[in-house]
Length: 464
Picture 1 (cartoon, helix red, strand yellow):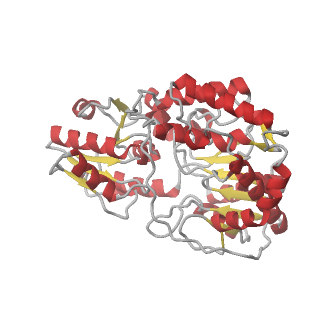
Picture 2 (cartoon, rainbow, N blue to C red; picture 1 turned 135 degrees about the horizontal axis):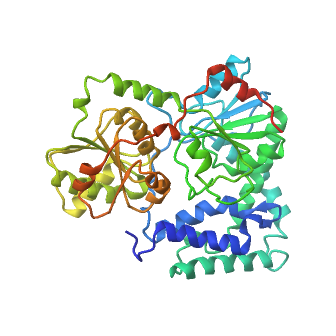
Picture 3 (tube, one colour; picture 1 turned 60 degrees about the vertical axis):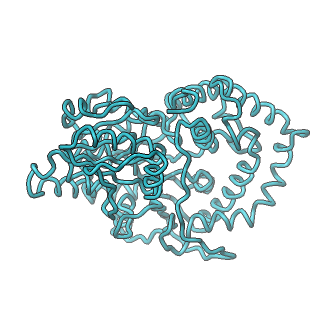
């Protein structure tokens, strides 16, 4: 657990309390609302510095070339796929949108994310916009970001906020690089927003579909250009989601105008702002394919006594320790660990060496291109912390156990429905394996998918 016994929930609640007391969501610095672009960064920094979450491990990325100019192809629609692709090099979340728009006769502007090759890449454009507009941004924000001028009140407020959060957690210095007002974050956002606004204006874009809407300057620029931004669900949502969880709020700056969701649960019980339009489009196609795989596998007996642990980048070694303990306690079971895409195998081998533990004979670390979704169809039990894979496993009929490592609070609402079992951190999981049962009504999380024609109509629909 964390070094000073602070939990993720405590951090979330204390940050939320200061937010409401100081009206941080409505705090504008030179026309930039700082809190929506800072909150998730600050919470993660505090969690990592206090040992609540493990620090991120940088994974190798293909270097992106710098661009000095680019051409804009006019299109009323733009698409930003997920940064990670499957073993076929596709993003299954955005693919139906691309196919629907093409079926209607449109060729959307596709902006690349991650390592995939595209004509235009989001990160290349961000760098280009910083080079072109950062000087302008610094000039326009000079008054608001200079402490001895108009920015004095902002610096004072920021210090008051940080002191209040750290004092409530008894954790001085936990805010780390965000201990002082991050002027660079405000300037970078302003510059990139300028660039995105001009790009979407020039392209005549009316709608942007985006899988992972954490690029706040892109969203803000698109909205400033008069376009609507629609997020396509790709993972777990909760009232504590660092980007989208704003329980009890009406409207928050730089969030998508609409979100396409897989089921009613995500619309009703995840703290999305009330002004955000929530549209249920049904389960993704890859989930249906996995259901077929499970139904047509050789026999149900092939899954019996097989346990898949879905690893989590924030809790890599702690979940690994639990896997080792559980495997030793239940030698009749076969255990497999599916590493998270943000993890690497060296983390597991290094931890074994440093902790002096031995790898049990009935535990393996998978090295496969198969997604967790494809793998889960082959296992009786699925164990993890707070991955969307756990909810998908419910729909596949697996028996799901969530270990109460920090971050488990993301699935607390699902646990309260009785659809999965919670395990204490010191458990060897024997009792949980015996008590676990498949979920009762998984269609609350994943509705029947929209018909292709209805989905196409939704994509093209103009809403106020």
